[in-house]
Length: 270
Image 1: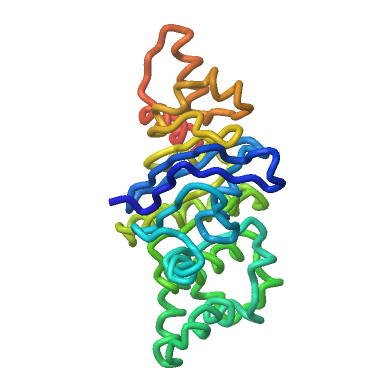
Image 2: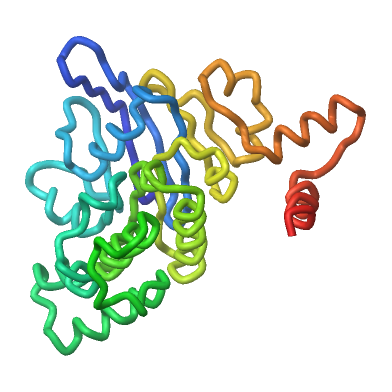
């Protein structure tokens, strides 16, 4: 079953230069998909169109089989949670508890049930010990984990990460990747779509979609995408370290599986 179906999508901000021209793309339910692309390739525009933050001009987008339009946009948004780029801009409450509670209050969840939900999802992202902390006392990674808890508490079918790690330090990025991996374990039917520049994150995905000039340049598993290093370089994209190492070994006549390389690198870093 498809979680997201995009058919013949055309979009332009100025009605002259097209961001997308007849784009078609399907994302299967329960998959973790990463969308890569250089600045201006249309990655974040795609996320905004899927969530209804931008209006579709031509073509069609369906979420869980429901077409996005003015009549059902609120139903669509109830199915999708989104984590944005800047963690500071997402905090609404005075404390972590208040922030996770915000969406629940808007959905008129009873107070006795709300406390249980807040505790449950704070624990899932490792922020249960910080519930009474103020946002100013948290790191960027911790703030994003709170934002994720608030999204998960609304039990969406789809979670979109829109450059959610781009403003974080390496520690914060690592924290969010770990949360995403945990989400995959806990919520088997949840579809995760991550818009990112981080090729190392893309290694964790089921599917990688490379967007360039509003079109799908490459699509496939991480293995299928990252072996095309010459094409990725032309698209101004890097490849993960493990593939750089594999290519270097290959040039010296040594063939080695990427999984074995990852194990070796981890052992060397211990």
